[in-house]
Image (tube, rainbow, N blue to C red; front, side, top):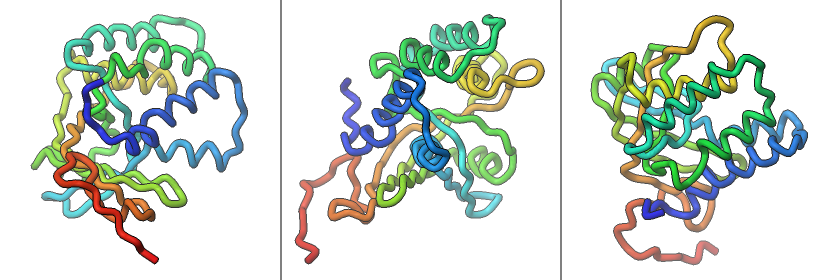
Length: 218
């Protein structure tokens, strides 16, 4: 789709998540251990530094729509999250996400969105310098370090804030009202493969600055 991101990163962080939603939609059952493992693809540690010191916080994140589509997608997310009276089951929510939201033709795969719910270290640091690193770890070996600049979306009518809160509420229906958390949009600048593999150990994989040199580690 012209994003230029490395296949190894997208396979683990995007396409594997799509596959999980397809399995939810079909009603497949998972052990607790398997489910927890799969959710590591969506819950990196957000590492920041600033007035609150060096910090790491686990947050659930996901790719967000392209800029020209965000307002339309935000309206659609509001409809599914709040305009449907009956509760949506996991299979139905998964179908809606696959058909209406988690589609590569709708998303900007260089933008990752999340919500701020704690208002402590990450909030203080990101507001101060607009920088963060997302550290993904998918046991036993896979890890990516994603260095980002960060936008904060906290205006009441901001479509990114509306979209991310509505998608959150599709899964976690609030007891009253609607979620109204500030939203982060992380702009991917660099990706490092930190996996315990021959091609990992901190090798930059985005942007590619030089040919990959494979070495014999035996």
